[in-house]
Structures are given as structure tokens and as C-alpha cells.
Length: 276
Image (cartoon, rainbow, N blue to C red):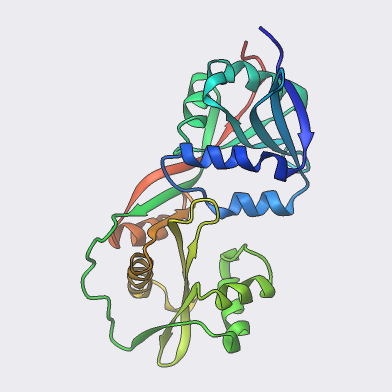
């Protein structure tokens, strides 16, 4: 088999391939991985065959847990050799794990056929578009869009349980400015916050996220807030979606009560190079 050549390049040199990958997806791409790629010291690899660019990979080689393959994509014409290329990539860059979105119709079959073991890293939920959710009101509760004057109070809330991982106060301020945050108030006191954030690479989807103050949980407030976030998404022409930890049973229960269904998974595959 003719050899494939790996070239380390700047991320802008593989953007068109990333856009091709997005079109192959059956669903959404969550921003957490894209944000990590932008902030981390990643290696972007362009894969060539003779004079043709046929794929790309993005590798994080600075993680304490080992070298992670964050993205891998091969154009249709060369997919019959995808397993071979993957093996060469693993050997050369010593990759030990691979993040796979199960809605990626290229990556998931390749992972399964290659026999890699894997573990769940996140559960992807979607809500049925235009679903009627009934009365979203709740006595004594008001839900309003966030304002910058309340930034510090909002930041204190969303930092509970390590909920907010999108950056510091400045990043949160940008979310407020972009009208992505909605506050749940009880007698004018902020007891919850919800996000409706269009996803960067799959912008027809909105990421729904929420947090309720520890003192006010298990009282139905989360359900009320999530229903509003779904309505806001649909009103803006967005498909609501959510990502949660496989161990967060309370969050899953709330999402499913509001009409979400399990639509996919984020998984971590353990790699080896013996694929040929």
C-alpha cells in the first residue's frame, strides 16, 4: 500500500476539511472540544496522498493522562484505507485515547471495526422540534434574561459544583452580552441560571445548560427553567440539545421530563497501533 504523508500545519489549513466533516455528521458538535482545541497546545495534522489532501487529525500532546486524538477525518475516496491510516497515525504520534462523537458516521464505525475498547464520557440529548410542553409557569417564580449588572452574582452561582467551565468572568460577561443567559428568580432572588447557546460548528443546534442553587434543588425549579429554555430555542429556530455526564442521574431525569431523549454519546476509545 502506498504511504500516506502527515504534515503538521496551522489549524486554518485544515478548516475546509473540518467543515466537510461537519457535513457528514448526523447531529451536533459541542463547543467544549472546539474551545479546548483553541486554547490548548494542539498539533494539527494534514494527511496527504501524493499531491492530494485526503484528511486531517488534531492531537493534544500535553495532557497529563497521555496523548489524545481529538479529531480524525478522511475524505470518502480514501475511507477504505482509514483503518490503516489510523494505525500509522497512532504509531507516529503515540496516541493513547480518542474522543468520538457517536453521531459521527465516519468515526464511530471506524472505532467499532478497529476493536478499540471505550468508556462513556458524556450523554447527548435532543428535544423533539416544535414539541408542546404545556404550562411553564410556577408560583412565585420569574424567568428573565440576564443583565450585566448582576454578573458577579451570576458567576458565584454558575461556579457551584464546577458547573461553568467556559472561562472566567469575562467569558461569562460575553454570554450575557450575547443574550444567552436566563435567570430564574424566586421573590427577586436569583436561584437559577440557564444557557441557550448556539453551537459554533453546528449552529442550527442550541446547547441547553442549567444550574439551580444548592439550597433550592429538588423543588421543580430545574424543570420550569429547562422548559423555558426549550421554548426560547425553538422560538429562535434552533434545535435544543444538551450534554450531561453519564453519572448525573438527576440532570438526565430533568431533561427527559422536559421532552429530551438520548440521542448520542461522547466516548473515549483506548487506542493501539496494531491495526494492519
